[in-house]
Length: 129
Image 1 (cartoon, helix red, strand yellow):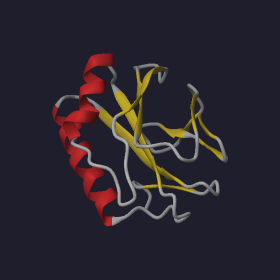
Image 2 (tube, rainbow, N blue to C red):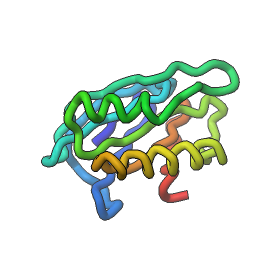
Image 3 (cartoon, rainbow, N blue to C red):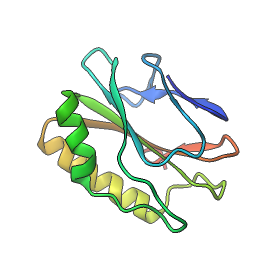
């Protein structure tokens, strides 16, 4: 389970069903972060890979996938915040997610979900939007 300061959210397993394993803490104002998991859905590590400004963050797929390779992760969950309070994934969020998902597949790592969180406790999944 991923725990956020203003709410809670479950990681999703391969079938896009909640996975009740492993806990990592984030604040609602967390920058783009990634939870890397092993074959038993245990957390191998949590990494912040970018810090954004007023208009977003600059992020390359290589920045994310480097952590997966260094930690020997089989799956990972992406998360970032929308300070506006609207958890709806932007077009850029969807495009970035699809690009990282494709590249992760090429190296044998599965992107399980990309979650957008807000300071008001609301959240949404890029995969479910």
